[in-house]
Amino acid sequence: MPRLLLPLLCLCLLLAGPAGAQIYSWTDADGNRVYSDQPRPGASTIELKPTNVVEPTPAPPVSSRGNTQGDRPSGPVYQRLMITNPAHDTALRSNEGDLTLTVVTEPPLSGSHLLKVSIDGQLSQTGVPGSGAEVHQLTVHNIDRGSHEVAAVVVDARGQEVQRTAPITVHLQRTSLNQPARGGANQAPRAPAAPRAPNVPRPGSGS
Image (cartoon, rainbow, N blue to C red; front, side, top):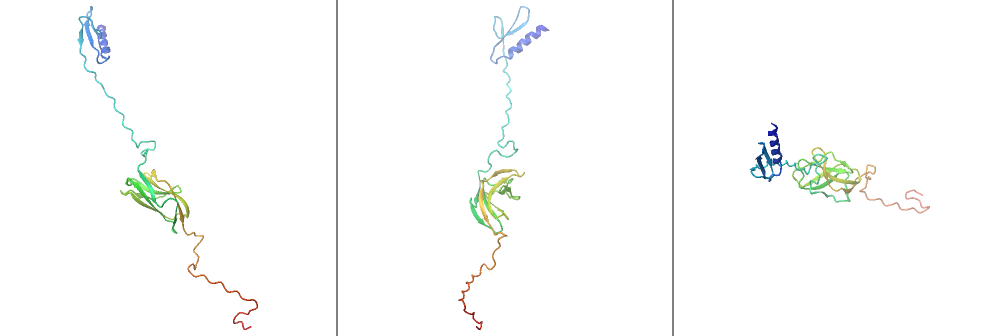
C-alpha cells in the first residue's frame, strides 16, 4: 500500500504545477511507477488535460443611491430646482399674509415627491405632489409681517428631504393689528379756523 500511495502523491504534486509542464513516467528497478517533470531514457510522456479554471463571482456594483442615509440620493435628483417668482429681496404686500411662490423643477417633479415651502427654517405641513409638470405654484397663508428667508424643499414619501432651492429673502408688508386704518381717511381735510382779532366781538353776540 505505501508503494501505491507514494506514486499517487507525486502525481498529484506534479499535476498541481504549471499547466504547460510536461510529465514523464517510468518504472524503476523495484517495479515502482515514477513520475517526474525531468525526461530520462525509456520514460513515457503523460498527456495532461486542461486545468479547469473557476472565475470568481464579480461583486455587485455599488448603487449610486446607496449611502449611510438609506435610499437618499448622494447627488442632486433635479438638475434645475429654483424659485422663479418672487425675486430675491422683493417687498410684497398682503394684508392676509399670503405668499405665493413659483418653482421650476427639471426634470418634472416625481410622483413620489412632494414640494413644500420652508420659511425661516420651518417646513410647511402641506405640499404640492408631483404631477408631471415642471412649473409649480405654492401658497403659504398668514405669514407675519417682516423679512423672511424662504426656500422650496422636495421631500420623499417618508418625509425626508431630497433637495432644496437656494434661499431667497422676501419682505412682507401687511396691516398691523396695532395700527388699524384711520377712520374717515377718504374725507378731505378741514381748513383751519381763521384767527380772531383782539377785542372784536363774535358775530351775533349782540355786543
